[in-house]
Image (cartoon, rainbow, N blue to C red; front, side):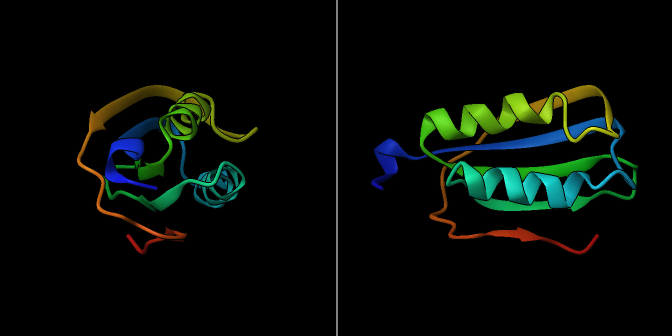
Length: 95
């Protein structure tokens, strides 16, 4: 995918988002949408993720992040548009 066709969005998700399988669910959802990137817990109790892929796939992941997995209770999602870095695969990073 060329840089013109690739979007990148970083999200910070707050609420009850740790201890509810948010990171693993994010990885599975991103891979199903052919999104690359990473996800990690923050010391603040939030979850941070980066999604790279087609604009449609990235938008879909941002929309998914607003709800998260079944046990999550998302109260806020901050989004930041960034320049794509050409990431491949999707990782769960250590805190």
